[in-house]
Amino acid sequence: QKEVEQNSGPLSVPEGAIASLNCTYSDRVSQSFFWYRQYSGKSPELIMSIYSNGDKEDGRFTAQLNKASQYVSLLIRDSQPSDSATYLCASDSGAGSYQLTFGKGTKLSVIP
Amino acid sequence: EAGVAQSPRYKIIEKRQSVAFWCNPISGHATLYWYQQILGQGPKLLIQFQNNGVVDDSQLPKDRFSAERLKGVDSTLKIQPAKLEDSAVYLCASSPRGGASGAYNEQFFGPGTRLTVL
Image (cartoon, rainbow over all chains, first blue to last red; front, side, top):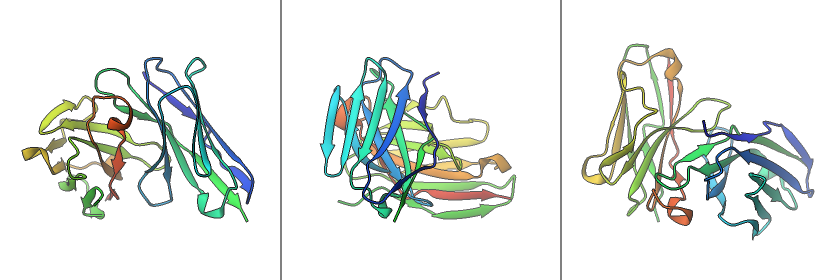
């Protein structure tokens, strides 16, 4: 059973701080990893993809991947109240169908 | 570029009634997915289409759920008869070419249909 584990939170950070969201996955053959942001009552929105070990930066977002530890993280710098949402981590199933398995999400609250 | 379209956005039905959802993927996207998202959970895959063929429907409760993607473009998901536990958001997503790693498998979601079964 492929699993993606996330701390459900809520994670509260003050405005301007760095928010750190973590995720572990069980399937060693997973190759691609995705972070989605989901506002309350809305559908998931893709914000970051990462395929190789190391860091990938896009604006205020940095995704980190460590395949040896089966660990993915998302850092949000200079957090804004508009970043308050649930963040879903997803990993693919590797060779074949590359289906995504989603975690339950971490709820982030950025306090003004 | 237009995103994934879904309709209706909301639906309220009585248990044992039937309901259908429609999805139109991003133009040119070969792979289409239907997910069920229960409150507080991540999306759970129901069925995956590649063009007009089914790749995986192992998680689809086939005694009551059915889906089709005629002509390899838009798709419908049907529930008949609905149960109380079917209350959820039904999400449609598409990707340029599922069955491949990396950017080809980036999935983009539609706005979803919120189903309430009374």
